[in-house]
Length: 531
Image 1 (cartoon, rainbow, N blue to C red):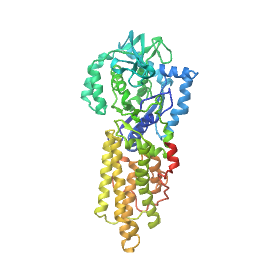
Image 2 (image 1 turned 120 degrees about the horizontal axis):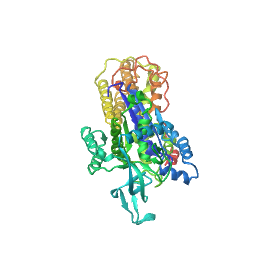
Image 3 (image 1 turned 60 degrees about the horizontal axis):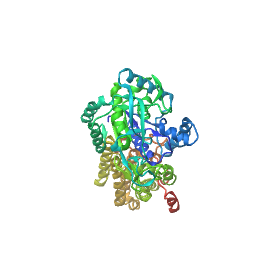
């Protein structure tokens, strides 16, 4: 993407029926890394996240806890969901709540337009309804369980809870009219839905034929009222999907809306159907552009099962960050798991990667190089001599890593981007071992070579500080300061991430500072306490 273009990225908005777990945090971190990368590359970037607060599931949760649904939502947002963003270092530009007046009023504008244009009509519907998914289910989405408390009942394959049979007079969206348009969209833009496994599932689903969508409920009143019939509230998914445009001025601020939309949307694969079928059909009906891309990432698995509070497999993010820190949290989930596929979490793997890759790999590299410049050159970055073959090899590795990482980010292959950047860590560690600067420092005759080695290693660190900043903002800010920046990231000549591979940006004469361990050793007691 050329520098300066608009880049709007959105997470799904999350139900406030419970507190967040690391599955929610995984999505937030992935979106944040992509946003930081583009922001650091000079793009007009906007990161949106938020909470989904209407619907039957929230109503029942609030009633079970003896409070009004709005009180419950307020409590969860302020005590759990907003603090999550601070815990894992999310630099979001906006936080949308579906109980915000800006959202509710824009939803009514959108609905009225579709109704006036003939895309909404009244009718009756009866079917199997999963409260957990807030969705009517087809028989293919259900299974007959033979064991446990629900033996003999049809249960949702996602939530493993019995479905209810609902019959209501509702308003319907003419989604069936958009079947061919959607198939044409998928064919014309193969990257509209990614990864390939999710795209294939979506295409197959639409090819089987689309029914019109029930978009209102009259059996409860916790929701946004239908403008022309206040005895009905809008189906929670239909109005929640609109958050992506209500947050950027739809119906109110045409300039802001035109500046931001369309978006790249990250979602869990279990809700890809809503975002890749219903959502673009809604936008087509309203005459609006569809998203740039819908990416349905995989699930985090614990003990072979999807992360879930109800199944007691949910892990709170602070259980990890309190011991390992937010940078390690962000790095681990985006390095250890192929983005787009399911991935298993284990405390043992997290601990091993922290020690090997962060503490001993990147952290030790940074500490050694900064310490040697301070020890051998009094903290002043020396002027390098003519590079030899080993130095030029490092320059080539940095240039290739930066280019490969940027290309991977464009594909949303975050794991590939980090792997590309990590080649610099590995090569620099090998370079220092081979060049032995501690030996070069002992003889005046080899001091010129020492200065070239120290400059080469320091310039490699400069590239790492820039390229890893979106992934590990705290550690890289400390490193950037130690490399001579007085005011944190940005004080050196360039922290443009798309210029990171250009060699020679760290000016000789820069005054290095002290650098505390970026990834301190974790004692066994603290580690076992986290697990």
